Image (cartoon, protein in one colour):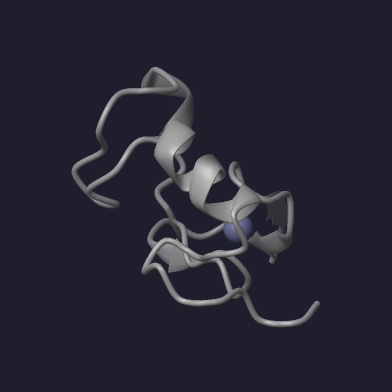
Length: 69
Ligand SMILES: [Zn+2]
């Protein structure tokens, strides 16, 4: 299967719609490009910007500490 970079943290994940990133928990939809940075996504219930801010503060999209890489 093809790999794509998680749009939030850059971890390589399977290029399969609705795959959760194992690192940051982002639900990859494959259509991230159509959303603005600060637009709330239906699938993730947050924007890419919010998810990236969580990532920066050491949390995944569920507000849990990030796993070790
Ligand atoms: Zn990720």
